[in-house]
Length: 127
Image (cartoon, rainbow, N blue to C red; front, side, top):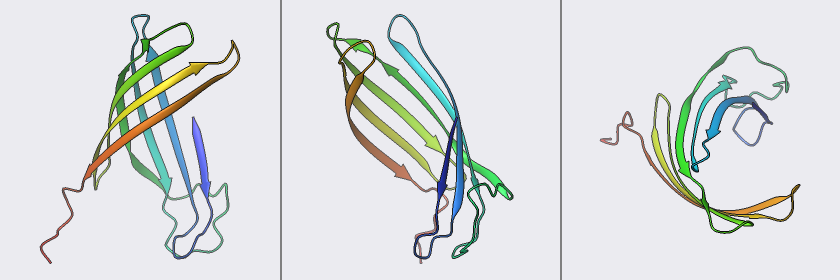
């Protein structure tokens, strides 16, 4: 579960954004995740959207991904991932490669390289 409050910035109004994700990694290294997203429909330029103003929430799309964690050693993992996300106006594909390092039993660090390609099928570019 993730909640994000975005304050007013320039011409963009304040908004609330929420996500709920479910993920699992099997013992063989294959992992998957699905995620649903919502956002508040605060009008552009609105100045006083409260951080907990949840009226007018609407769907903001969904994501799904699949990955595989290669165990390089007891400390290092390499995880390629394919993710797609969509909503009513776009479809995105994302390719990630993450190198993870286990510092100790309490700490992990990672580096992620990501490529994102997006199409907007309902966008009329004829004008």
